[in-house]
Image (tube, rainbow, N blue to C red; front, side, top):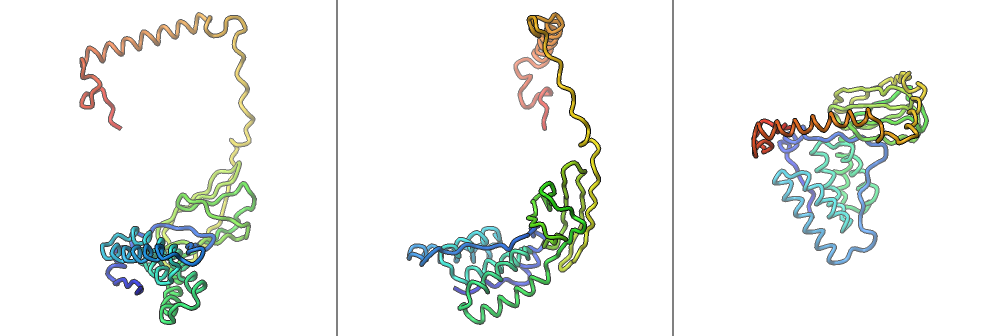
Length: 265
């Protein structure tokens, strides 16, 4: 199996499609648990070839799935190399760096030229990764950090440093009984951004609980209340009038999709 080669034009074309990925722990891709069976090797070859065809057709997400499956079945370093190269081309630099790291650590006997290339690309990817440092972030189980809608792993180390792909990001820090803190910004490749966390107490969170509702009348309950039946009668009459209105207004087609009585959301 030969490593995947991506042209500079292809890389430039898809760079804007890079998804945002926050990473606390390195990504790892599973290989086979033991010696692969012949049928697994055959499927791995087929998925490897399918991944190459997907790249040539510009179906990058499909290529990632094929290379992941090929590596899971065979453990062949070429599949992991192609996976890392595809992630790199998609701008998913954190994952690409981790995939190259895994290749170098788990496959010391891989082809020397492939390892040399993987090491050079790994260092290149490391330089493209941006980081944010959250300063003055409180500790505790009631503190959570979210980036682009994903919760960031927090082992309690301070300051908390998060690696990100270069693009626009949305940061949200939450703490119980405090107002959330928001930060939005664009990170370029290799950016090192320090963000001071300022969480203001929420006075509404300290307000006493609302009083319990008054108990229902003991004799007869709400069903015997004249006020209840008066309100219910008005509601029923109003509902009947509304139904009559729509029946007269549009006849049998009053609630069909093309009628004026249907609200289009």
